[in-house]
Amino acid sequence: MIKTVFTISLLSISVFIGSCQSKKNQESTTKNSSELRPSSYAYFSSGCFWCVEAIFERVEGVTEAVSGYSGGTEKNPTYQNLGSHAETVMVLYDSNVVPVGEDQKQHLEVTRDLVGKINDQYGEGTLVMPKARIRDDVAKVPGLDGEKMSKSYNNTLPIFGDEKPTKKLIMRIKTDSAAVEDPKPTENSIILALYQLFADQAEYGQMISDYENGGCGYGDFKKRLAEAYWDYFAPMRTRREELVANPDEVDAVLKAGAEKARKEATKVIDRVRKAVGLA
Image (cartoon, rainbow, N blue to C red; front, side, top):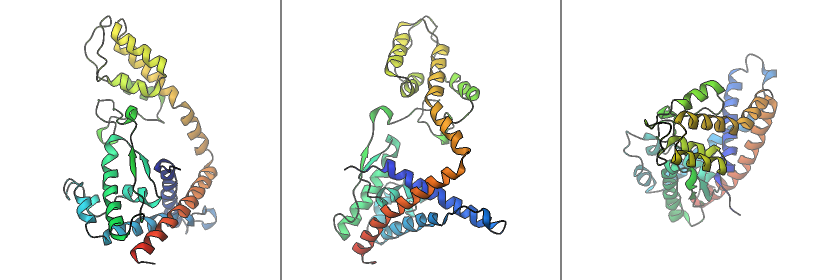
């Protein structure tokens, strides 16, 4: 049965958020300890991360394997110091299939090198070797400027933003100067690339046809994109409002996720510690 990091990552996020909540609770203990929510379950995450990373550091050649992907230690000191939690999370839960985007593939390659070094030195199966799963249709999501969508590029669309500002962002997408009646080029179209992610097949096919036949302006295409985007995330916005209004439910999910993550990670930690002679 294939395990994917998609599900397990949610557990890791639960542990991480719980850890943050735990620190926040600690800071407020002197104010009113009776108001604190249970959060001792959250301390587990950092210990597991550093245990695995400490094992990486014990293996001859691991640092060299990682630095080969770093682009220089000054550019990316995270890899040099083996402090990237992305790689640790992949091995901590025996993930063997990892769904990633094209630009995250390098993290997986680093992880595979690390796992290979560990298994070569301490025996095959000490850590599970993960493989990438990259869906072609979403391998790279374009941003509003045509580059990959990233907060670093300031070209993202907010999922939980207000409707009017979000639509304004979409209407600002740059296009060529083709007249309304002219056919529009479909290749490298930001509007089409984004619309395909949120519209159904028939709607997307219709927009392709309208591009090629002419008679519709870019303003109309942008409005269709804005409507499709807003409708697509409507259930997520509703659910988010429900969770904001019910923090007890959020805490319960975090606690359950942390407990499940602890159980899975402990199996891996125990196996690895035994293999490397730490148990």
